[in-house]
Length: 168
Image (tube, rainbow, N blue to C red; front, side, top):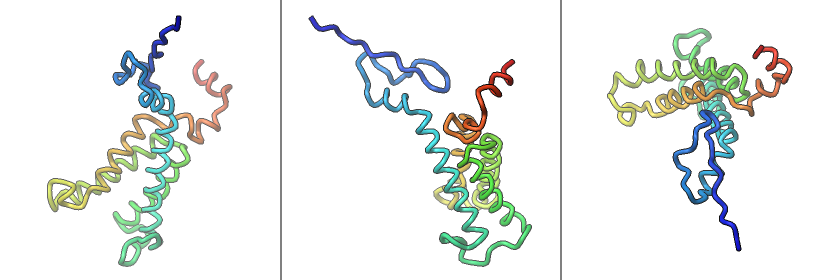
């Protein structure tokens, strides 16, 4: 007689709690996504940081379809500073180095861009052209909340010995 296999309870990587999308029967898609949650978050961090860094490069150097007008002058507020933050913090997020701090700075930069540049024109992002700013703001806030993950460069550079020393 064949034995009935019950599905192994999937646990969330970040909280350790049982997944609410796991049912009594085997849910292959949910299990696959939960098993690869760290990798998916790493790709999300990488792509979001890369897009942000590319936006900074485009603004500073007028490449990659950057602004149609001249690039902001050195030190010009807020254009030059925003572009430098986009480039530097975007690269830090891509690499996974000082990720939480960089992501908070990126999120704050985009919140500033939304509320100072876009929101005075209209309330909703679809009306005021602030979709990118709003999406980047919330996306970087998620990265700051979840952290860089095990696929980050900082996780690779930290030796197990250093981690054990920090915990004691």
